[in-house]
Image (cartoon, rainbow, N blue to C red; front, side, top):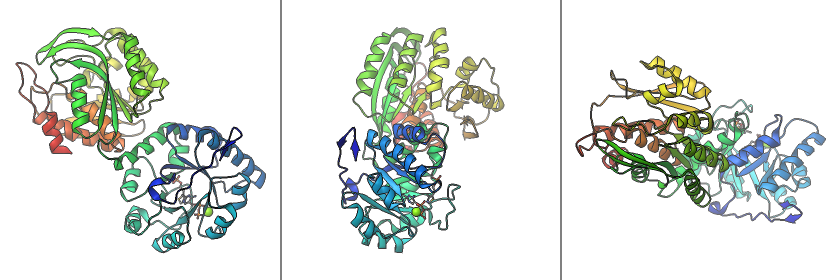
Length: 488
Ligand SMILES: Cc1ncc(COP(=O)(O)OP(=O)(O)O)c(N)n1
Ligand SMILES: Cc1ncsc1CCOP(=O)(O)O
Ligand SMILES: [Mg+2]
C-alpha cells in the first residue's frame, strides 16, 4: 500500500483474529460520485473497500479504480479488486476477490505474491472448504438475503453460515441484502465482516449508514460492551439526570462517561435550585472525553441554556458524532422548568439536525411543534414534523396520555412503528425519560439495531416503573437495578 510516496506494507496475517478483514466491508457500486460516497462510508466506519466494477470499458474501470485506490491509501483502508487480476496488479491493490468462475486463487497468489489478500466467493460448505484448502485469506459467503444489486443463484442465508462456521477457520465475509436491521442476525450467525453495497452507497447519508452497520459488531465485544457518553444535568436526589443515566448504562452492561451541563438541588418533591455549568466548561468536558475515550453513542438530557445547547451541538458536529439520542428535557417531574425559552430554539435549529433519535414526551413534543397532542394520530403528526425539523428518527412517548396502554410512536421518515405496553399507574416514575433514552443509547452501543434497541428499552423502562422505588415524600425513582436484573 503506498501513500504520499511512502510505501506502507499491509501486514497480511493468516490468523483470523489478526486479520484486517473484519467489520464493515464496503463493495462499490456503479453510481455517480463514487469516491465521495466511499469516503463518507470510510468516515462512518467502513474498514475494507472492494472495487467491484462490472460495467464500463477497461479505460473507465482503470480510471475509477485509481481514484478509489488513492482514496484508500490516503485513509489507510485495505483496497481489494473484484475479479480482475490484471487490474489488481496495475492498481497495486492490497488484495483480489475471486468468484468461483474467476480464476484459480493459487495462481492469483503466485502472481500477486504472499503479502496480498486473496478472497473467494463461496455459497456452501464444499466451496468454503476448497477455498480454505487453497490457502486464501478470507471467504465471501452469500447471498444472505435477496438483493437487487445482483442476480444471485445461491441464497444459503445466515442459517447455512451458522452451520458451516465451526468448520471454517478463515474470516467469513457475509454478503447479499444486508442492512442495519438484519446485519446483527448475520453477525450472530458467525460473520466476521459484512459486505454491503446498497445499504450504504445508496443511502441518503452513507456515513450514517456505515456507522449503524459498524456499531452492530459490538454484539461481540467483551463487557463492558459498548460505551455511552451522557451529556446531562445532575439530580442530587439520584433519580434522574446524569445519575439515572450512569446507573442505566452500567447496570445494562456498558461503559458510561459523563459531561455535566447543570447542577440541580433536587429531591423526590422537586427542584429547589439550579446552577448551569459555564458553556465553555461543558465544551472542555466534551473535548476531554471525545478526544480520548472511544464513545459509541451519545445521549443528551438537560441542556439548561441556549449557550450550553449550542456548545454541545458544536462539539457533536466537530467530533462527527452520528449516533446521538436526544432526550429534549424541559420540565422536571415536579413541574420545575429545566430549560429557558432560547434553549428550545437552539435545540430545534442546531441539535435536531444532529440527532439520530429524538425522544420527546407529549409536553416536550407539543413545545417543539406548537401542536396540541391528544391521541396517537397527534403523536404521529408530531413525529412527522420533528423529522422534518431534522431528527433522523423520532420516538414520541405517550406516557402522558392517561388512557389505555402506554404507547410510544416511532417514525424514521418512512414508516411508523408502535410500541405498546400495559400502562402502570405509579407515582414512583422519577427519571423515566432519562432512563428510557439512556437504555436506548446503551442497547445501540451494544450493537442492537434501532427498532430492536427501542423495544428492548421499552421493556426495561416498563419493568423499572413497575418496580419503582417508594423513596422520599414525592415521586420515587424508577428501579434501575431490579429492571436490569429482569431484562438483561
Ligand atoms: C466479499 C464478497 N463476496 C462475494 C462477492 C461476489 O463477487 P462477484 O464478483 O460480484 O460475484 P461472483 O463472481 O462471486 O459470482 C463479492 N464481490 N465480495
Ligand atoms: C456482489 C454480491 N454477491 C452476492 S450478493 C451481492 C450483492 C450485494 O449487494 P447489496 O449489499 O446491495 O445487497
Ligand atoms: Mg466475481
